Length: 116
Length: 115
Image (cartoon, each protein chain N blue to C red):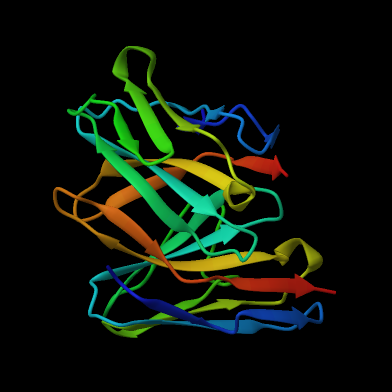
């Protein structure tokens, strides 16, 4: 079974529209971390946010906001007033602790196209 | 944070040949990770590389196909052996910061095309 599911393969919006990227995760650990990474066309992975399993507070950073709901095992990402520079593939990831490292599981990614 | 340099950034290789990808980190790290990202797909962990011991491979990946070296705490190599077009992917090196604020840091990736 997938540990991290991003059901939206590709989304296209027009600049200034709001867009929400969905992420559903599955884990039996009580302590875990959730992440969002951005992969622009250049290919590098850019860290956006980390949440631990004990902190369900929503977070806002500029035009970005994240909604973490343990009850539905979801960690959704909203971009407000999208811009062309937001065009990228966005990955949701889950990290579970192991003996001496954290194992990361990545979703399949959502490709966001923001058109001018 | 960690700065990770990968070489080469891209290559086009003939089937049946091998390519060695280098990963250099700007600080000493215990563990390094190698991921594969097939076209349009997510990242899949290939193996975990500890300095001074054999790499630990994930299900579906074997040492004969993806031998890994880890000669010191700042460097690792991944070799893609006897390549076929199905090996065309982005290969990413990663290190992690553990503790209460874990994070994975990635190199810029190696875009491999096998013809």
